[in-house]
Image (cartoon, rainbow over all chains, first blue to last red; front, side):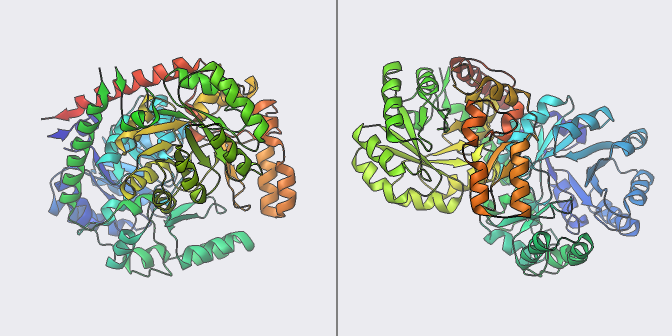
Length: 316
Length: 316
């Protein structure tokens, strides 16, 4: 059995499951594993330069011949060079984060690329549909990393009602129940980040993965609102220092300085107290680290069971 | 057709739909309409004295012989008197908000009352299950009024996994898609507040109802975090003044003074700029004001359609 939606045809995938393009962590290892398992792996360009991205594209293509995508982070100093690279390299699917990619869509479409921006509001979803986006990822504030204000449960049906292109749900999903909930709200698929960090294949530091497994429902916090780019992380010494400085002595340059390099330190090098540990509120639901293939299979099985259970609630 | 879960038997209702016990607005008019339509109406005691509550109990009993409940707000100066009243009056179902009702549960159970606290975390859900609660309402931060931090999509499955008693979903639900999403996440029913404000029967001021109908997905904001009791309202002059004072010149007494009486002014008297307009993020999904019976019927029909649509996604 499988769960099939039109987004599966659009992206050439078996399961309507996308992997979030997380900076530092969405590398060829994870991306190829997700695509091989029937989802859509997405390389996270983050702040990396084009050399790094080119290297990851080559590695991914060696590891899988299935479709995969690249996430371009618009706040990166290398965003434009990376965009030129993905066109040159004929990447087939691009997702966008960290801003409004409206101005880039026409060029990418002309190059035959499927374009799927991440949005956190109805207004941006509408604007990007008009600009030619093929689908949008509606991301709730429960997500890890950069976030908007609106929760998935409220955001999703409002975006679905506002646009005619397919909507993919992100934020607060880590199992088959979440997949069915997202589909019920009108999404055609889902994107997961935190769940895929806790996979064998992800290059995240083992201590960070373990920290997610041990997290509870209230383990995350949002910092950076004062800077205009709020991000959700597991709460630790770093987030407490950052949010103290935001409140008491707001100085954008000092804050930027305080944040510099912390994400790599946290998620890749395993500095659990002093690093930035971007992860979603669904961390508390994640209780194991396992191969990507098992994550996806377990999810689809649970989704089918969930759907079966729902059908039994209907009474004539 | 109807959607039947064990909570329907527990509460003696036809549809697994509870109405939030909103201060000032959840009066006999709305409560009796919801119960007559097959849901569970819940009188909102808010900060009201026992005389008011007794009057509402009598009115509700004149208007319906179906089950209904009372919400006791634990921060109210009259909470204890109101609790004594509901025992004396043999109210059959109590919901709780605004705190931890653990200490009251044994006494209410002894009086034969079904007790359903509102929780916004896994830890409180576990504690209240141990204290004898019959079910919990897991309320996501997208809700209107007093809120916690965790979004419904992330909170619900975590609470469902943590307790053995039934879980009712609140926060971000206003239609049949939301109902099915909540059931998929493991809830046995839902509670709605904002959707029921926009009913013909609710005594809310017409201008407030209209303001919800015109709201978009980003219309709400949370104030009061610095005071330790955050609340979600439609953003207006009042919330901007309040949050400015929270940031720049934090003085709990001045803030309390600024907030005094504002909820009644906003929701009942229709002071759209200067009042407190408690409402959830799902306001943007609500596009009409109609009779309670129609709200519930439309919702159940849409839920059935949603479930039918989901079943078609399953492929052998």
